[in-house]
Image (cartoon, rainbow, N blue to C red; front, top):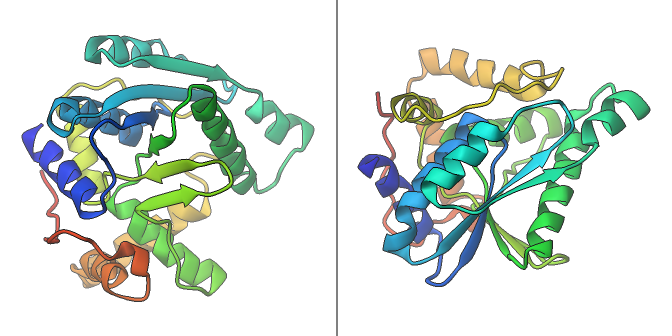
Length: 244
């Protein structure tokens, strides 16, 4: 727990993500990334002097979030479950052949609206180190451009600020932490889960890493230096190591 809190706190400080007095929402899908982020931020509240709330966007896939609600009670974090019909719109009414992009936009829209309804202006998302590397490679391979989501994103039209405090944490570290802490991770019931372009890129990065072990570290380091200025850390960055 102390190692995870240290990595998340250093990332938050490097990118000036959290200020004293902030009221922060965590988007909790029920997957390992968001549940781990919820646990770690709950532990950091007293040290970084902010308050925390959790929001789940229920897409209408019949998933049970009662264990997430119980975790929030144990952590003393207010929990909000927002019911939507996103799944039926995408898979039944529109019958999208490539649903991921539209689903992502609709979930983000529902999350941002829920945050605004609660009077919150900052939301923490569970993207980690590997997500950043894979997104960078996806943009290069599929779009022919050098791009990635930002550590801190100011959504001008809504006034919502998105922060990603787990960018110094490897996916393997997240998985191991969730198991050791016995966190309630919910199985994703999306019919296209594990059959996406991101999964293809994840496998590509894994395969290349077998030949070039420092590949992910080199990509992540390049993102922090050039040509993505918003990725330049303000603090002293040290390469995060995977934790067994």
